[in-house]
Image 1 (spheres, rainbow over the protein chains, first blue to last red):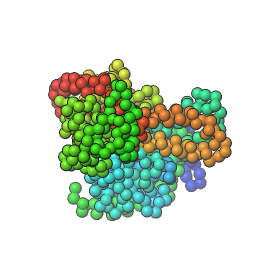
Image 2: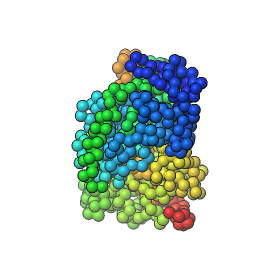
Image 3: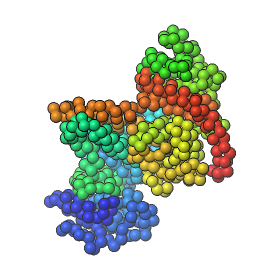
Image 4: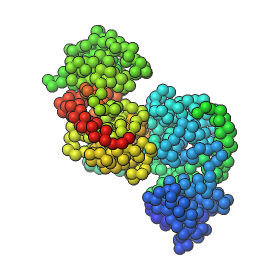
Length: 320
Length: 320
């Protein structure tokens, strides 16, 4: 029932992803037209503007909570939602719980950088973070880069306002020291100007900054391409040129389209959770489901559990 | 002596800006080729990678410190530098001091948004900020928008991760409340996806987030236009189209070029300070000097002093 476009688009997306390897289960009201897919009934829904924690507590039969419960009970291998992100976080904390040793889950978003994909986290699960959270995000991102992006030895960098170790705010200065002392392949700070060019395999930041970056990236790409089109069609010469470059522009749009990934993992939980864009098209939903399936096949949750369990032990040695 | 390109480019920029109304004074070593401009000698320089506060204390005869002193002593009306931003901040705090009631100066950067220019602050003077600093940034930005952008009643918005008042981190939640209770025309939160489209006349944020946004905006525009060019020239059809759209692309580049503004005001000081990009071209330096001159003509410092003195009094009534 999540997403800005209504349930029919979500069902279309699930049917697109449906294959021998992927069996989508829909969660929604009894009268939902499922097009042949399995339906698990959920009487309630949580709207985009409801307060997450309160709504999840008050609505145990909402589609978000029921969907997370299916994973917690082992009836599904992963959960995908384009609904209220905060409610997905609250519902998965309730129904799936955190991996032992994980302080905060993080949203890991693949960035279609020019030099190849990288992963940015946290993209908005926690608006406020501590330095030790950022260290864990580094570990979670490294597992993501290994299992999903296929990078054997991912390099991890910290988003800050200068490349030098002493540039940053209190949070990044402290996180820099923790990351530098960790077993991660830490490449130091990176500036946001490198994000779309390709800054590192893993880019660590707090959820506020990460969310601001992600939305700025999306908005800037959209505004810039719109502005370019506007300039182009303002003259006859430009219009002809615009026709000729259309395939090139389409290739670029395709590469940068958030729908290509479809979603982001919510990492740090004892179950696989993918958060799709609120405004997801059926294609984006299908890709989000495929992303979830890839996470299940690569046992991202199991590997994170093994990795973070080890790190949780060694982290206790770090004075805080 | 500031800037990544060396003093000759800065001198060229100063000569470009030289007019009946604007008389640049250069500050540098005795052997500097000034091309006829007045020179005030400064024996020392502060490099881009020096620690700002220490360097400013240790080098009272550095070009940055001497240039700020000229304004403090009334021998110049404003100061422009493309050098070490932190050192400019430290030197201007030392030689010019803060306006009474101002907690922290802020860097105010004009954003060439599609709907018309807006101003973002703080773009990096303070990596860490408190909510009452953000309230003052709102007032400083409003004066900037009135005097420099020519907006009679500027609307002020707070950069956050959702438009709703309850979306954000601890800092923005607290700042939202202060801004909403102020006399400013406060329009609530704004998301970063609107920045380049045109979010508000004044966009308030902390210096870490602001600096990240500014660099992400610059980097994304550059990477995107480079990637588009690469796609276009990969086919013969694209190449021809690329030639035809060249004027349109140039108009867009021109509009988005940071050199068009040349610099940013460092607001909250008892003197007019403009910080230019480290990598400024002569044209950017000239525009930064013209920006400084416009600030002097419009008495930005005097108006800020009047406005913030009043606000400083009323702010004391707000429980913190």
